[in-house]
Length: 438
Image (cartoon, rainbow, N blue to C red):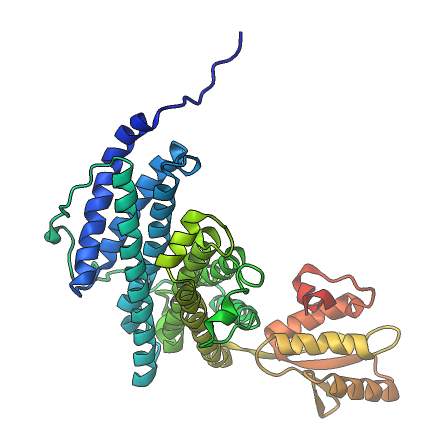
């Protein structure tokens, strides 16, 4: 006997009855959003959050019943997904605007004005796009037989102004073991992320056409998600080992650093969702009548402009500004030590070991020196190390003293213990020295 299928095919009339109720609150919430935007009133984070919740619920019902694979309901489902994506982006921008004054970034009034203007323009673009997409949802829904009430929910169901309320702080600062090491490790991770994102390029441009071929060939949702997760990891480490500690109270620059983590994190969230939207719904990538209609509502050049000229630009900007702050923090926490290490066998400090020592010197903040008698050679310069290597050979020394940060010295000692990795095998801690990591 053949097993009965777990999937039951229902008629479009039956589905209409199923989707009617889940769609009602979406239409009411989105109607109020459109009303508020058109009247010039501010849309709160709570409001965006409620619309996200309703679109997610409605989208789950549509996906559960295969609406995207049905000609009658595919457009409706696609428009709902678009509204969800753009509303999430709008939520993060609104969150940034609300929190921006409290991040203690120490920016000039001019820079504050520039960012606020850019963020509000991005929000206006998203709000306008959501209004346009909702109109398509209404038209498509009515065509399919949905009964759409013209009434929105009551205005007072959502507060226009959100106040940040919190309990009084009654717990004293925590103590964290090895706090200096934690800060140094955190700073190195921040610098690494800032460098990675800066190296992808893509400067601001008024020629929006130039961005058309960047997504997804050079920048895509997967890459942005990786960047976002790296920044989020730094934030988690900060909150675990630095936030509300005596160390944070003693070093005001650490408090400021939290803002330079949060800003790029939330901006990358915006970039992530806009890239997701572009890859999934723009007709340049996925063709079809619905995609063409979406491209008319959400103008693709303007969308690309928000991705690159707003989200990505300011993500990079605040990471680079944060990197400058991190350099100052490192000066407060770097501990200078000395250590004696053997010279490489059998050839001494020739090009390869000198290059590895130089890479260690440049990997960490502060200076690293090779000291021969009373003469110092900068380890950041391969030529300087080669010169030192010649002097060591002339004097017949088998050991040499290094001076620098504890982190750099520890890596140099590990390198020396492995005979400067002459065979090309690197301990895990020194994997950044591998030629394929450059």
